[in-house]
Length: 433
Image (tube, rainbow, N blue to C red; front, side, top):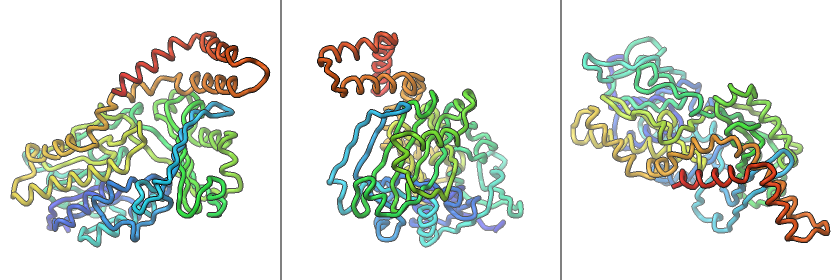
């Protein structure tokens, strides 16, 4: 191995790393993929959402054998206080299509399946292998890696860092900074197992239909974050996450936050009678467009979570990860076909491809929103005001509707939050643009 040279080394076997290695291998390049886990997905027991479009562009027949759970036909968005929620639901029969747009998946199973496809395409995979450092030549160009296996260098024309937001290879090499705690969320998740028929009756589903609930409000105890619930075939994935900086400042524990979320009157009945079999924690990049590091250099590229490629507004991550992995592979393959060296100037075309894709266009659109979403009123006062207003409006107690309207407006003024609310809404609208 020490004397063997590869066209590319991909560090990591998550969605971005697998997408990159698969795209390179299918183009006939010699690829080595290194994964520190026991197997791809071994560190990911949680459920997640798969966006079909990004994967379909890589593996067109993935629906034939990929371990998919349920295709999503209904989206629920809840703004919660301690005892209630105001929400919006969208459900459509159009999502019961031949080639569904979104699925729930279990990452441990899905990553393992995707990795098998990568190996079948011709890549060499080494698991339980940790990259300890990048190897450079006299001019500073990255020319390979050193692992914890035997310490001998492994050489390649290009090294692709798909190591995730918490990966240290790039940071140790000075290619990217360790993300500050206010740009990374820590999410904790559990898998609650129930009979399939119970899940379908409880969520009004048939066959492989699925529901997703995404929630915000007082459930995060004033911290910036969200909760979620996904339906799988015979389990429910439930979790909650907040910025690491908020956990540190407020002294809350992720596990305690999850326990409180599960006990909410709107959530508890959905989990009744379930058996908890799996628990996991995962870090998610939340910094958005402004937190994206340098993505290329002499002999190296960064993809996926390591590059902060998560759309926190729309809760999208896997599709951005796979797209960045594919675009990195296309960049490397194009240079190889032209016998062009992988210099920083030539690898800059990766950034150009990204800028032309939905990935950068979406992240740039919402570049000002991450800071706006740090407004604590979104997770304390406003959910309570909405709940109080809704309860006043829907109670039929002999009070005329005009008086109810006046009471709702008065409650906003009494809290001295109306001016702030209007300002916050306008601020979010400006950031949204």
